[in-house]
Length: 272
Picture (cartoon, helix red, strand yellow):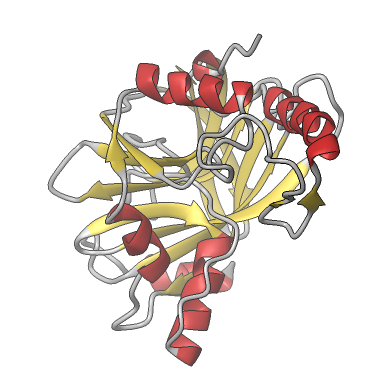
């Protein structure tokens, strides 16, 4: 964490340089399971915008920088916010061929407490809020004058270094910081932004329910059954015959239904 101090403690003006914070995120996709998913998410803060995205996008961009070729991997949702706006652009990927874009101004009403702790040579102060159907605890540093944190969390008088909900279903912690190289381009995000379809949450949930009804509809171009003798090739390389399609659909529905524990719990899809 010394690199974090070196980069930021001397920064008096917000966005004086391009900074990247890497969060380790631990979360439960399924609230009924004890399984924990661990992923790294990046929060890029520049003079133009902030971007919050999965490490997979960073890997794709690194490959593009090294080879000049864009080789898309697993697609994930991400967030962008321009610095002259309070609006977050939420880009959601639900498993079909498209990204969907929703605009919103997430606000948290924070209660700042007197509790202080020292972590990695930084003084952190505790704050609490309710957001997305959960109660949250944040530890932020006034030494880093940036009013942001992971995901859509914002509005504190300092940077959020650690964040978790009271049920510990989601836990975020900064594990590294670095300066973003000059000329760095978010190629994978820009490719998704250029083809994103504007929707609202009602429409997005409708699309998710349609995908639940017909999990392979985009691969099969809307057809409900395979023609005799034809096979279906999935993105992961699995080949399905007509006889295997129905059991595979049931398995896909089970996976969709198991993700019942999103960050914003009040936006969880209610599948049949």
